[in-house]
Length: 456
Image (cartoon, rainbow, N blue to C red; front, side, top):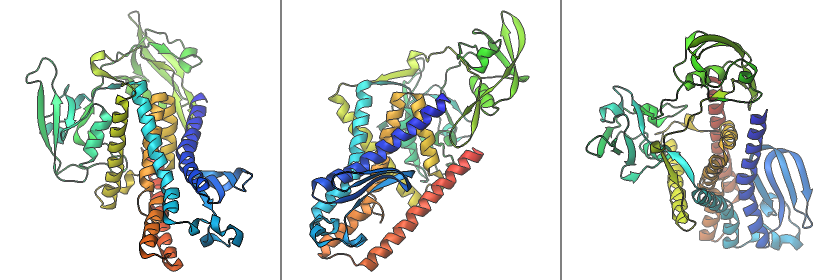
C-alpha cells in the first residue's frame, strides 16, 4: 500500500511539475504582455476542480492528465467584444505571440537545467560502466570486448555512467556502420587501455523493448552477492515466517536459487502463493514454508513480495562519486541539457526515417510507472527523471508540427514574412493533419504500453 501511495504521489508531482510549469509559463507571459487568458487547464476532459480569479480566468484541473492548455481570447476561436479586441491573442504583434508560445518549452528546458545543476551540487554515487559478461558470438565478442573492462569512451566521447554509454550506442541504431569503444583494462593487465571497433552491420534492436547493451551481447558487471539473508523487513511475509538473518538460500520450491534475481523474479510473479524455501542454518538444511505477500501496483496489477534482502554494499572500486561546486556544476548541467537535446532530436529523426521502430515509443503508462518507480528509488533518481521528462517535453514541443508549440511558431513566422494571416482553410488543413499525426503517435505509444504490460 505504501508503494502504491508513493507511486501515485510521484505521478501527481510529475504532472504538476512538467505540465504545470509549461502551461504556467504560457499563462504568465500572456498576462504580462496584456493578453486576456480565459482558461488555464491541467489535463483534458471532465473538470474535477475549477475556480475563477478577479480577471475572469478559469483555473481547471481535468480528468485526463495527458497534457494541459492555456486558452486565450482569440477571434479565431469565437466572437470577441469590440472593447476587448486589444486583448485578443490574434491581434498581437509577432514578437508578443512568439514570446507567449516559446515560453512553455523554454521553461521546461530551464527547469531541466536547474534540476541537473541541483543533482550535481548535491552529488550522487553511480556504478562505473564495467562489462560483466560477453555473450559468445555476439557483436561485442567479435569486436574483442572482454569481461572486467570499463567503458571509458565511445566515439571519443567520455562515458562515466551506463546512461551515457546507452545514449552513445543509440546514436548508431539503424546505421550499418562501426562504433569505436575505448576501454580501461583491470589493473593487472597491460596495456591499461584498448580501443575496439564494433561492426554494426548486423545489429538489430528489439522493437518493443530495445536494449542496446543486450543486443550487442554486453551484460553490465554486478558483483557476486552472497545468497545470505541480511535484511528482513518489518511486517513482511518473511518476518511472519521462521526465516532468520544469516540463513543461506538454497532452493525455492525445490528449484535451486543461483542469485537474488532468480528469487525476486519468482516471488514477484507469484503474489499470495505459498512457497517452500530451502535454507542452510548452522550446518543444517531446513525447509521453511512462506506465504508470499501481494502489493498493489498501478493499473490493477499485483506483485508478490517476500521481504528479505542481502546486507551488501558495492565495493568502492566499482563506484564513483560525482559532485561539483555550484559554479562548476553549471557547465556539467549545460552538457546534460545539450546531450539530452541531441538524444531527443536524434530519436525523433530515427523514428521518422524508420531507423528505429515506433514500437519503442513510451506512452502514459510507461511514464506513470517510471515516475512511481523513480520516487520509490530515492530523491536523486526522481529529480533526474523529472529533468529528463521536462527537457523531452520542451524539445518535442519545439518540433514544427501543427498542434505543438513549434507548429504555432512556424505559422506565426510565415504570417510575419507574408505580412498577412494564413487563411482559415489552410490553417484548418494544417491543424487537422497535425492532429491526425499526433493522435497516431499517442495511440501507437499507448498500444506499446499495453503490449509491454501484457507480454514483457
